[in-house]
Image 1 (cartoon, rainbow, N blue to C red):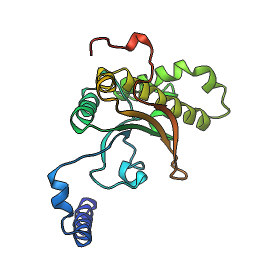
Image 2: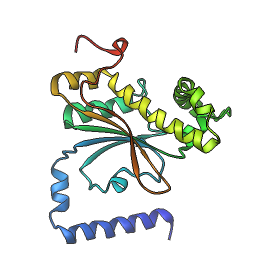
Image 3: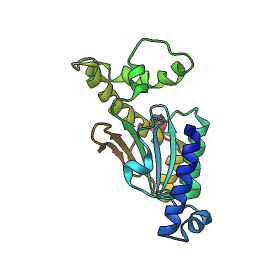
Image 4: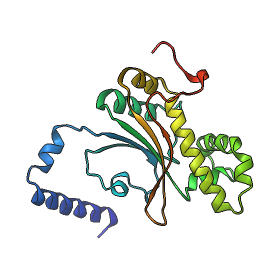
Amino acid sequence: MKAHEKLLLENKAWSLEKQQDDPQYFLKMAKDQKPNFLWIGCSDSRVPANEVTNTDPGEMFVHRNIANMVVHTDLNLLSVLQYAVEVLGVNDIIVCGHYGCGGVKAALSHQSLGLIDKWLRNIKDVYRIHRDEIDALPDDDAKTNRLVEFNVQEQVMNLAKTSIIQHAWKHNKRPHLHGWVYGLNDGIIKPVFDMPPNTPIDPIFQYDNI
């Protein structure tokens, strides 16, 4: 049996199990989605949003990319953000990185990796801001993991800089922004940064006409 064929069999088994537990499960799922959360996570296959938070389908709207970035030129991310905030009305947005992130580790190196260099440069900018503290750490793993935390914090702040979030904060008093880091070694999520609605940000990034 080919690997992709096994996935299809597993899907059928999962569907049958869900229907045995609740015959109306998929009928209810098909009607609508009302997630409370938007999860912006890393594409790493070891950090599936629903599994690490023990949530069911329908509870979490998900966007994933390399190193859980919030880049202001990324129309995919911005479209997901706008839909989650303005249409779905999520109350919480979580940016979740993970220790040992390959993208963050690559950003600390001087190796050119091709097209992804353009993406990783955003992480290098975070490294530049915190270079003195990171460079003082004893080994590469410690440096990577500290930059993972700083990167999550920076991406949460990037959310707050968007007109989408500022408009929602002003008019709806939501969403609450969270920065988390997942531990691959123990499966535990560590909160590292937090921005409740209307947290003050640098006036340079504030919009007056929203």
